Image 1: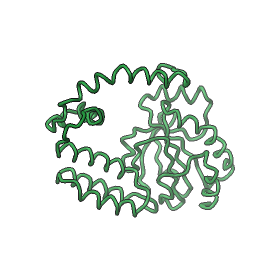
Image 2: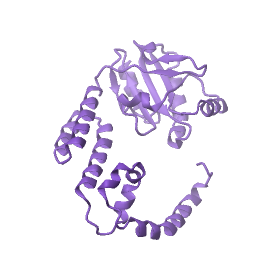
Image 3: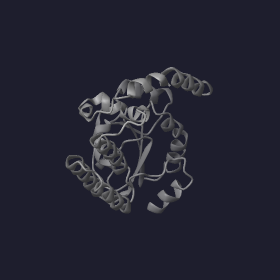
Image 4: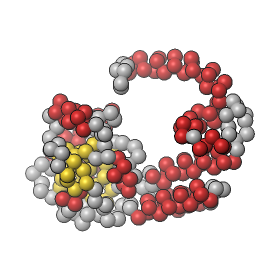
Length: 251
């Protein structure tokens, strides 16, 4: 998106790119499987590439442990049902490192505290006037939160459906819609909203303040009931044909 590459040219660009860099990836990945390198941030970031291109080199136990722990941590962050956490607990037993296993157990316990049916956790955000606003300001109402960012193309695609959904309930005082951006740049966020004449509750927050809500990937939608309990931690998107029936059921 930064370079404005046309979609029909993007795949050609990628193919050419990988064709040129693959020999280098293979060459430099060999003999790079060293668990001592896990201390280095950039090594952890490229480890998937190293593993893919290191040939038949034997993977050290510590690296295998770290890789499995990383994958489990991602799955833990995306848990939607209780039975999923039961399955993941059985997977944790396979992790040899006590340190990794302990961290994963703590993360799993935190996830189990905040899931569908649990009390929602308040957070403070900023509105377009840079005024602090709180989720608890709407306690007693159904709250539909759309989490997005200006750099997220799938998020932007959902805006037409989001505006239509919000318009359906504009005269209903029992439901509010919050458009919550995780943009770090407030100026870019404001320009985006102004260019599209977006109206309603437009808030901005740092993703780090949404840790308990497990906001890893966006777009993401959270639905909170009148009793301020979570009805859907991973709610249906505005474009889903069943979302209106879900909200009507809560109303």
